[in-house]
Image (tube, rainbow, N blue to C red; front, top):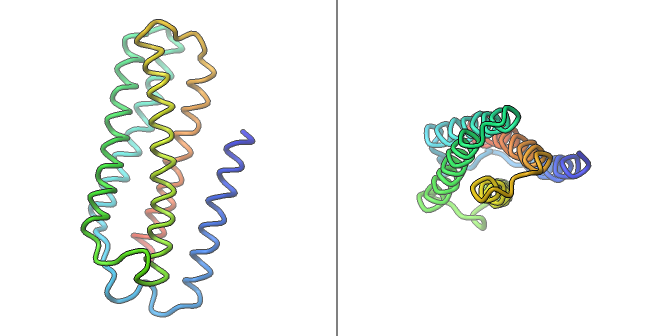
Length: 168
């Protein structure tokens, strides 16, 4: 929990920087910045669905359904990598860069740091999945902590999507 609290403080600092810049710069975002809200909404849905699938993996573990747990972990990994792939594809289609303007700097910083957190979560989920597939899966606490982290990353994305795409 202390680890997640420190992550919350880190992301809070990023949001504080974003809102500080937003309050002092007009127009915000610049008129030449166009984000694909539909693409962002689809990414958001994919990430929310991945929270459901990791929760289902947790439920399967509690009930001793190892095959089901393995399946839900794999689905979670697919959804997470789908989210990251979409984010990277979006970066290639944006008409601005981190150096274009303060909005671009904050957009890439916030979404990039979040993407690194998603990647770290996928690495951790992969370790849990490998343990489940190799029969060395005897520590449910590890999966629980990783699941909390994954849910946290999803909630942060919802805040990022709302801030950067919807209420700009």
